[in-house]
Length: 118
Image (cartoon, rainbow, N blue to C red; front, top):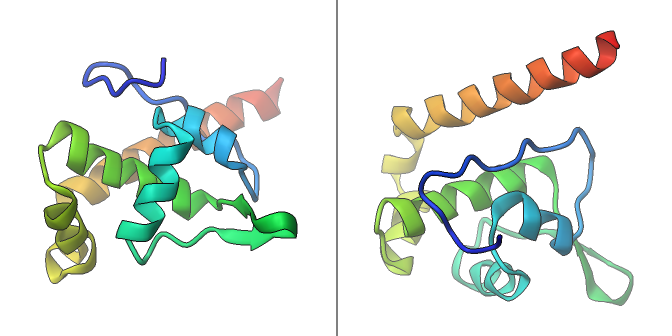
């Protein structure tokens, strides 16, 4: 289940404040050791570390990991290319990626609204 797949939709991100590395691993279909490696390669990915160096990711971290995953696994970028893309001006003006993230957020909000109406 953790293998990257081009056709599978990633699960919706629950409305929580913090996520453990195990939860993020499942939400992004990326193994925990890969997440730890990406933290070293992408300076903007810096989860909060608490007791015993445990990582706690926030919603924006999960979205960023999904973006990194997309660049590497779906769009064919190298780590260096993805890092450049994430930190450069190109990342700010990347409307296609922004639209994808907005679409994902809208879907998650609609799911949340359905749950609240029950």
